[in-house]
Image (tube, rainbow, N blue to C red):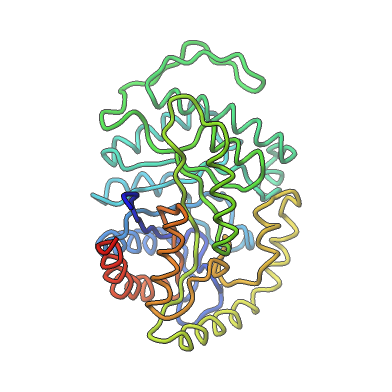
Length: 353
């Protein structure tokens, strides 16, 4: 198999991914913590980091929240190898402004920057700021027009658009990208409009954590959709929360420990659910399976002995997943464990193919 096998980490933009009240991982969404986390990930050999975008904490407005794009620019200047993916909700930025920001971070990073397009599920985040939160399919129509403009500008093209949402006349950005045609575009979301969007405009589709059989079906569906002109075949990423130990029993015990801690956050989770667009397919998927962690968490099944987790990662890779965007808790300790125990096992597996 020639497809790359890559591993990334979720930045802790709004604190711990599994439970917010964990004595082994006190709440910390600070710039300093995220800076050190990503620098450690790069040192350990991780390939990528995803910095999710929220203007206010989605759990509760009184909790800290890291800002994605200023942090991405700073991380770009501090790192030398790791890919930096910043999420973006199109209604927060005009495409011309966002494209210029993305272009600048691409230059700072020397060709290591990427956009993760997400069309948003948190109604309160927009409406409480006086920003119109359109109906689900309308958000995707807006996002499709938006990303087409951003992509063209990042390619150095002169853009003229008389669309439903934007009027742009002969706009182009300089200097052009000296490292590649444009930064990579990741797309999140699992609805039909999201699948059409990634097929038409994206490079990689981020799938939320879920069982292998479901992921195989999603990959097949998007591969069968009509691709945008000039684009290479779609690549696939998967979000997953990892709990790996010497034995499956030890892993399951830690999973149960985190689930018990997460139960203390039920009031916050209920508030968050009340803000979710009911048409969000992502959250409909989450509701089907109890899991630890965000974005599907442990539903991908990466809980078990070191060998079991390595085998399951290999199975997902054979199904088409190239980038695993991982979560842990306590994050730093478990991230180091993954690098120490799983990287060598997966390298041996790759060498045997």
